[in-house]
Structure formats: structure tokens, C-alpha cells
Length: 271
Ligand code: URA
Image (tube, rainbow, N blue to C red; front, side):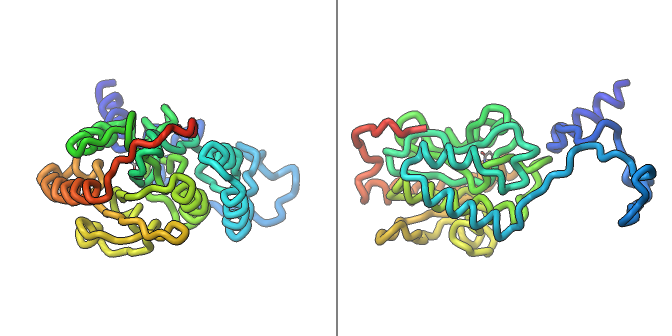
């Protein structure tokens, strides 16, 4: 019994916190069987679940682009994302995770994808990595309650916290790009390699990218963008916190130069 419990705890720690079928499958011994294309109706096993018919990827990306482009405010964009059915991740997630914080401060942070806690709560960075992120932000006088705005590249939790596939990212990206346009940040912080890869399209390791200013075009404006280490990585490699600290110092200096965070009248469109 204790063995079962500790195995279960270990699986949950590793991120496998959902059952995806009624019965466990031992994949070390299970044989792969391929159903004949035209089995007689009587011999065909009933499908366990209704098959999910996804639009082709091109369709998914096209409809994501159309839905995102039609949104003229953050709340419209959130509604469009919640209505969007073109990303397979939505089918296994509990929540659509849009954003947290206030867009008015003009500082936008972009992470990777919701995890278990974010999926449960429906907001980004609310688990252990989020607590560390809050401390990192506090060290440069930022705070999601008053002047920082946080989102992710991916809006639905990938099962077992696996990396999002290129198709999943491609379906979410039009929403992220519109999200950035509507939030109009004056400074962007990218958290981790996945965010860097999808937002600026550079696949260099985050260790190579971090700490160097890049730019992201929003309309006619080039917005300074700082890639840094993901807080979940820092929880695993605390000795690298000093590198993230250096990046945050550079962000603090840049904020000072740009007169950020801005104190602007609230538009009522904060999330
Ligand atoms: N990691 C992320 O990248 N985003 C979250 O929202 C939580 C953990």
C-alpha cells in the first residue's frame, strides 16, 4: 500500500497528475494492434470516446489569425480565445489561461504554458514557479497587482507538462501576437527558451540568449525585449539565480530610462 502511495506521489511530482483512460496500460508489455481499415461493423469495438475532429493545421492557424485580428480589446481577445477550438490542448485542459496583472504598467512578461496549478486556477504563474516569479518581480519594484502583466505563449496546459508541439504553438501564436499589440507593452521580458523560440523565433539556447536586449516590433514601434531564465528552471538550478538577477538589473535600468512603469488611467480592461 505504501509502495503504491509513494509511486503515486512520485508520478504527481513528475507532472503525471491525470488519468487519461479508465484502465492503466502497461506500455512495456502492451502489444500494438492496428485495426483493419474496414472491419465488419459487428466486430468493431465501440470507441471509448467520441472521436475528436480537428481542423487541419492550416485551418486552425487561419481561424486563429482571423479571430485574433477581429479582437479590438484585451477582453475581446480573451473571449475569442475562449471560443477558439483549433488547439488540441484545449480538450485536455480545464481552463483557458489568458493573463494576469495590469496591462497599463506597460511591462509584459511571457512564459511558456500553464502547469497544473495554472490550469486549476485559470491564471498564469500561480504555482511554485509563479511564487518565485513574484519575488523576482518584487526585487525590481514590479508586482502583478499594480504594474506588471503576465501571459504565456500557450494558453492551455499540455498534458503532463510536456513541451508544446509546433502545431499547438502555431495555433496559439496569432493570439499572443495580437495580445502584445493590444497590451502595447513598452518593455517585454521573455521567460525561458520556449518563449524566446516562439516570440522572437531564435532557437539558440536560453543561456546564450539571456541577458541581451532584443527588439520586438509592435506596429511602428520597436519594443525592447529581454530574454531571461524561466523561474521553474531556477527552482531546479538555484545557483543560476545570480544570472537572472543580472538580467533583472538590466531591466530595472532600462525601466528607469523609459520612465516605467507608467502610471496611466486604468482603462477597465485589466484582467
Ligand atoms: N510556467 C509557465 O511558463 N507559465 C505558467 O503559467 C506556469 C508555469
